[in-house]
Amino acid sequence: MQGYNVIVVFNKEFDRMLMCRRTKEPYKGLSNFVGGKIEKGEDGYAAAYREMKEESGISEEDINLMHLVDFTYPLDDCYVEVYVGRLKNDVVLKEEKHPLYWSELDKNFFDSSKYAGYGNIGHIMELIWLYKDKQLKI
Image (cartoon, rainbow, N blue to C red):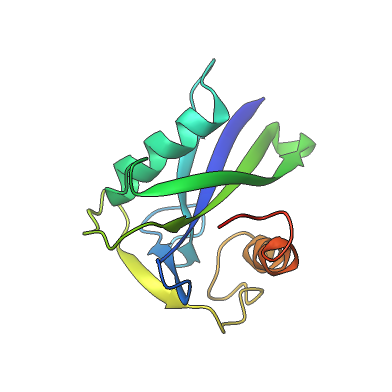
């Protein structure tokens, strides 16, 4: 089963989050979190930090990630690990493939005409708000 990850990065003020505009399928033209493939034998955290660095320039020194939730898709023979973190300081973003931008947090992330994942981004954001004052230390 192929593993993937997405990383939800909040700015240090916790009033914006990092998004990318996809330039290829799936979800071409839609907004998504940064992330990518987990290599065979690779630890989930190592993969998340690697993908985040490759796609945005944000390093492990800039942010502490927390594993939030996993989604399994048996019909697609894959799973997605979701990580979340808040920047410790301001960073200069370095785009790899997809244009990056800072999104405000008051959007309808369930809108599948704007956001990838058929509502998963909205669901992830609801989990973040649910846990942010309890178990989620960001």
